[in-house]
Length: 106
Length: 402
Image 1 (cartoon, rainbow over the protein chains, first blue to last red):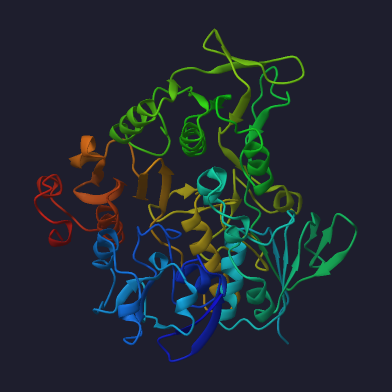
Image 2: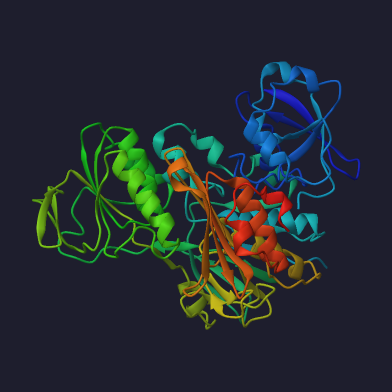
């Protein structure tokens, strides 16, 4: 398990424990964190699980695949620390990770 | 006083409704009643990753136990609702218990359409709708086993793909002249037919099933006048709305509980969402959709109305299917007579089919082409007009087209 903090656009923090091997998206959605839609169920095919990774953590996460890059092109208001949360598998090293959610996924 | 809400049916729409109700400020107690042993779970992976064995059961569950606790939602699982008593505003469970509601939400979903032919009740005839079905199918999924799949729709073909991957000997029987005929256009049907055949799946199109044969259990299937040996039969010939609770309570159903744009039935205290409903779609005709999108969006609209913030439902429907390494994504509803525009090359296993109606984008089918799907979905919502010549030219990036 890793404790991950999701901060919604209104500044509210939700700390969620996510099993190792699950995606950040799954952990957030199952625990009712609002602001991640994940329309496609985690297949890197919809760009509605867009999150911003805390700058202190961006370098330590596995890099984006081309498909994730292509999908991020469809997310709203992206920045260099934008990721699709369905593409990040949780590892024990991610304990303490902070991610921020955009205003909207659509 | 805050209102008491009961949700009957523990699926995708139910889980979404709980989340949306709380997000919209509904503060009454919520009771969610489901007839399976499980809390709401995702059905789409059942015929895909879960059947393959690459997806643990716990991952199917849509929400954590903690979510329901924090949402003040009481789950009553493994319980069947026997009746809705509208006058006294109660639901009666099969064990005789009565629960009172102020608002009721029906998210009862569908049941499989059953095969009606001689031998349809033999042991070894399987359906695929819930976790128990897949667990039963998995137990007999052995390499070399001969599986006859009745129905070349989403379920049949997703199972065919998994079965082929697992080394089963697969034959698909489809009564129509092409695969997924209700859901996709000709070029997409043809592409998937070729892909299945490449993986060793035998396709019998225009072949209706006449009988399942065997002595106590499946030994073969008779279709198109011919006998085929089989160890397993999987039937995927569609679903029917579970609307009998509603109709017995005097609510209208026309192959789906009739609801308005807020998900409200003819009774102002009773709402319905998801596969079990029929509503007036964004194109102005009554429609029953079977998809995650409709479950989510209609549940959200019910929640808005129940929370006192009604907003009319007009979202673009979308669908997907995974077969082998192919992801098919569809947005909008195609219609006979649409202008069909092919973008990309099916031979490259990455292409899309756009449907234009009066020059306006009405639907898109994308195979391994998620950007085309996303652009198309937005265009459909916006009623965008995109020139066919541009769509057909893959050298123009999809994002630079609108």
